Image 1 (spheres, helix red, strand yellow):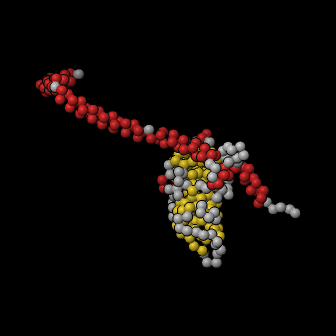
Image 2 (tube, rainbow, N blue to C red):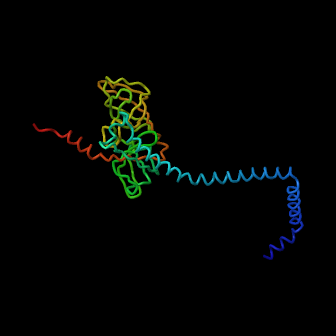
Image 3 (tube, rainbow, N blue to C red):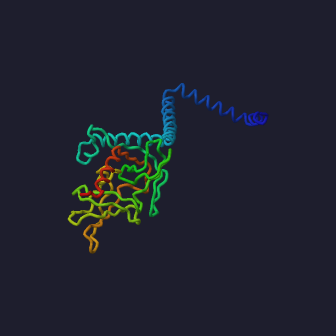
Length: 277
């Protein structure tokens, strides 16, 4: 405290000068209309800039919560859209009571590998958030994988960029079907095989899920055709498909729950068993 008083005393002329400057400025502004208007305008701009900067800072730190709320809303709207659509693309998502067969759960991606033969996606949501094993995963652009392991608060999904991941697919334009699988090279390219030779294929054709499995509904985006060929001695096309999803930039995804999955899988399993005459 003594040092503070000593500092003020040594510099009291400066502090008196500043005090008189402030007093004079206040008198000029208070007693002159033009100067008062200029001061108010200037102070408003300064205050607006300060408040704007503060708003930008607070908005930045609240982006995580806003993104979570948007993801929740998108999941709800996706579920309603799948249930309410009357187009042939989604006819099979409707049950006999005109209710919902598919529900969407948002989840944040916290880890995502790209440079392995068997890539995985880790989510910061688990069983307490509604996630289960064998739920399909999609981003806002296209399918990305399938959940394989779930704990209370986390889940791990097999990426579409996995050597053992396959999904039934078809062309939107002509309905010919095939099987999508990653060849382990370019993470932006998939291979679609088992496409019969009569299929009319064009570069740029859209490839979507066929709905053959109980994991993904029919009509979800997979990618677009960039090249195709017939291997020597083969009766099928090998088609290169560029992924719609950007695997290098996954932040939020949606897990798909098919409430009629068990019924569909059981029926398909019975159909595969040989019949005795």
